[in-house]
Amino acid sequence: MLRRTRKKRKLNAEINVVPYIDVTMVLLIIFMVTAPMLTQGVDVDLPKTSAEPVDTQDDEPMIVTVDRDGAYYINVGGDDETVPVSSDEIATRVQKVLSVKPDKLLLVRGDKSVNYDSVIQLMVLLKSAGASSVGLVTE
Image 1 (tube, helix red, strand yellow):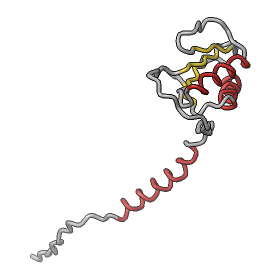
Image 2 (cartoon, rainbow, N blue to C red):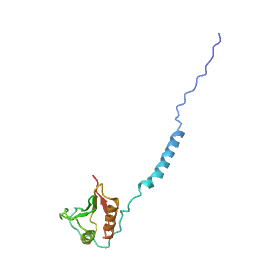
Image 3 (cartoon, rainbow, N blue to C red):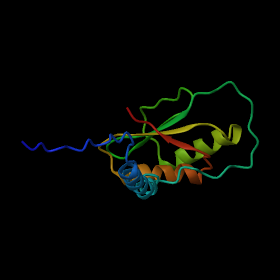
């Protein structure tokens, strides 16, 4: 009887890393392409004012609200937020507060059913009033 002799294969304990490098390169390209798309949005880095900040202990933010009808409300240190205010009145109040404290935090709180244009117009109004930063309130 003839026996077939099998050649024993030598075990290879090395890992082929070429497929992992290919996958890593594809992921890197995907992140490089999608990252600029994620950073597009409203310009919220507003210009600084030339007024000097006044040292106060007041860290409460100024909140401007837009309801579902597009009416504006402002809350500045305990003011009545239930009375609608015109855009000119908001600009005047914001300018007065920012003249005293230019680094005051401004927050925009908008109803989820409000027209997007109303929120953008409010942010433009706050920027023209001299706000250095504007934040958006979400739940």
